[in-house]
Length: 411
Image (tube, rainbow, N blue to C red; front, side, top):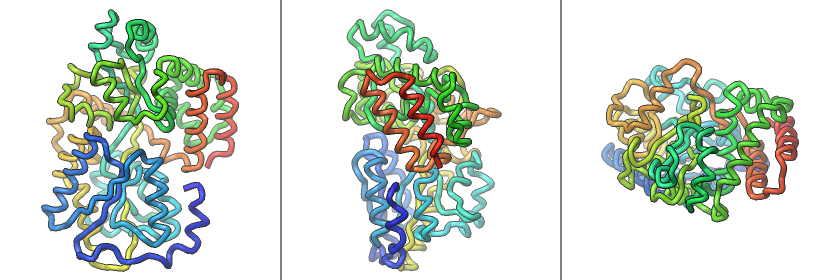
């Protein structure tokens, strides 16, 4: 995304026809873990049942790997029929360049504004009053997943907060467990983001991500956050470098690690392994410190193409993604929360029920970083978090100063 503007200048004229069959859609996404693949199958099967053909083009790795590939194809004149991106500013430049299909007529016809909640999700899909994407779920980073049995084996009570986890972590380490399972890169930036809300609060988060307040970014509340990161890096094992997020989840569910700070997509892995929420694993929204969720997630965008029949198929899939049936089935598999508040989620597990309850509370919902910060700024913060996590010699003071500089120039 950082070099996208230059590529867009000559790209619009390059758009080509998509799949030959009127209802075939090539769909790109980065959902490749076991739990994610089970959720994708729900979408593919539903589209097939509706008369379409889902041509799966999964891109292995994280969004950091997939996004440049997706953007390059669209700007290079080889668009897919539909693509997953995060709900937020991932596709902002593509929309400005006129490369995405306008979904406004469909959204108004089906009344998306009436049932998509929180409203910020649909707002994040809009540009100059028009709708360009379909939010399919609510994913929040604000969770810690724990294995209660690991803590019990180490002779300590399973934690109910970050504070209790920090107190228990040395005992886990002493008994040969990994206190905090993680990978590197975007995963450690996720830890920093979660600690910002849990230790600094929603006001601090908004001052930084929304208001771009450079003074708050190096103030005493943010110091607590980087001190939390300092503790977190001492609780990780050396094997975190290069580890995939679902591999870190696997360490928790197999009893090799005590906890993982990760978005609620981790639940798909626990569910696939047959683990029961509240028994085999537990969940701490807001790290047990503050009951707050950010509301990011996944959305589908539909690149423009030259075939009206493909556009018809795109609209068919867009409509299907927000339907009640798909919202229930998909999110139960994915571990995420639905974008509709008018569906029956009685089958949701104990952790999902916690999330649903938080969504209903006044002042308990925040926008995500993806909705507030440009891709460039997100990348700079991620680089800093990764550097800090892998370099014990970097001090909290140094991190604060660099972070403040990034926020001062943020967009």
